[in-house]
Image (tube, rainbow, N blue to C red; front, side, top):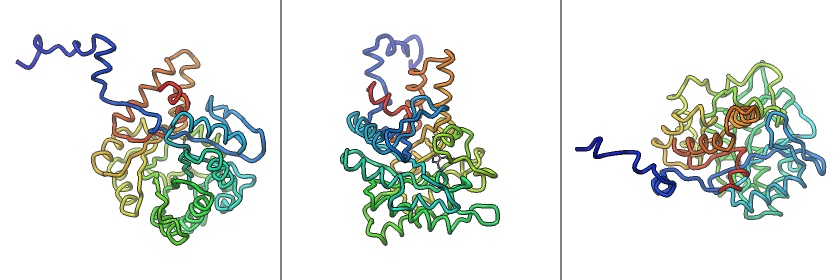
Length: 323
Ligand code: PBG
């Protein structure tokens, strides 16, 4: 006697109060991380054409966003830098006076309680736009890992709370861990972009961060989207190398990976709702094709339901206001 007419699933959907009572998945501001883009100058607040509501800001303006994030109780912010000049090795990324290092110091001074994550990568800083140094037309793994260690250490010296390598070089988590430990930062955790796919959905980010590869693409280091088992191997390796938190990216196209990572690993799990996922909703809503707010909630709950503890999303301040 388990089925209809004894059991009627609609009984628990009849009123908002009942639906609220049986809601399985919840979102709190503390689970959201807001990606921010910082550039040189003063009083700069430039909207990114492909990402309505997302801006490139100078440090003085960034501090205002950070204060807003703190006030909303967000889990944190993650910083991406636009350097004054790009070169072959992306040297501003590991300059003590680099734009992100300056931003970290300023934000920690203005909002000491707000968690600041440093994205550790070279692609915004290299003149060729790749995530490491080039030799023989491809990204050289170990030399790039060495530089990524320097990026992490300079961010640590500036006061960052968490470093997040997004480059997908082999061995970068252990390389960064060793560099941090040697510099006295044994306490600083690493959030690894552990399973990062070569995704079309990063398109708008590359406009925001000025990081479009000048030749080729990222397929020799980011994962091909056809592979789920390989994603699990990537995550396992990063956990073994000492990643404290792990990330799957992009989010909505990878709900299966998020679920598998949730079930397989105990580490706190983040998912990045990337620029293209955000832009897609914004663009469709602007043309009256769907309801932006409802699409936003639905995607974020889907990512949580798949198993993510933490979501990096450009919607973070909007959601923070609504929660
Ligand atoms: C840098 C990096 C990228 C993103 C985060 N870190 C771009 C890329 O790999 O091309 C994408 C984030 C987004 O699309 O919102 N390696």
